Image 1 (cartoon, rainbow, N blue to C red):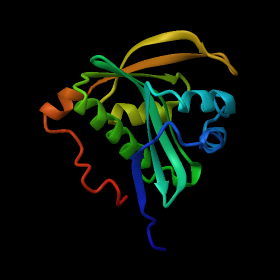
Image 2: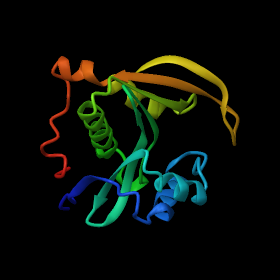
Image 3: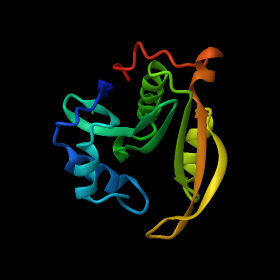
Image 4: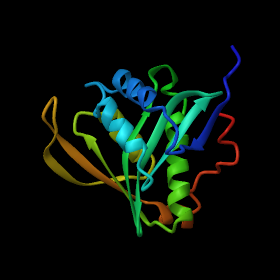
Length: 171
């Protein structure tokens, strides 16, 4: 079977794909989508947030998004459709977000992850995030602690560990 071409691009806040974002989250996260369709619609319309999407042709298969503010960034969400997981799509989305942070001279990226989501924690640890704290009862449905992680994006670049994204459109 021939490998399909995946492209990563910046999401335009004027696009109307909030239903697809929700559908991917609903089927990919263990406890369903963390946000409602309406929350996706509102979030994706915000010009102060940055989202990148992974697509095959025009079919959305994953995304990452968050906020860049001064010298810090926070990843709000990253998810890949179940049928495309374990194919490095999340890795390339994360690298694209980090590339944007680097171009904006942002040093630190933060995120929260469910305490029970060991797969995500492992992914972040492999991508040079570190655990810095926990938030008790941060998540609901079900109630669960959040693990707070951070990454120093500029340190990666200075130590030659920044990903070569020249082929990121050819996953």
